[in-house]
Amino acid sequence: MDTAPTEGLDLEQLVRQELRDAGFTVEPSLMSLDGGLGVWHDPTRGVVVTWGTSAEQRPANHLVKYATIRAAVQLALLTVLSEAGHHVKEDFSGLELIVTS
Image (cartoon, rainbow, N blue to C red; front, side, top):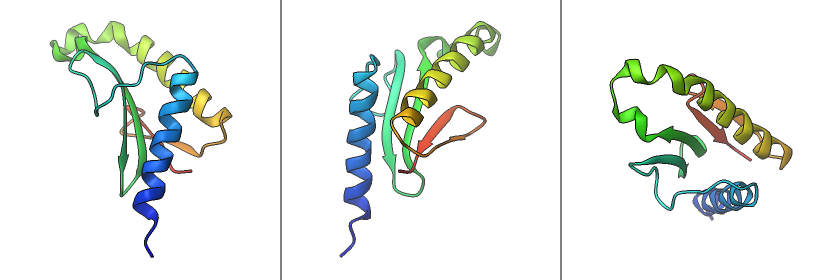
């Protein structure tokens, strides 16, 4: 009996709830076009957590000021998930957090 897909979806729901409990607004889909927090299950990696801004639709020179905010949000996400007992690693140069347990 293969329970991996079910376990991954259960982990996704747990991660979503923990982030909501910490005060984050978790988008119902992968990522809102207006930016925000995206959470989804990737069967090959685990639960993916990422944060973006609507500004990312603009030219790259406008993104520099968001680097500090992104770093702060990523640190907050990492802290919340780690303190909840999850195993979390960064992927894509820190743009995504991957929760595997």
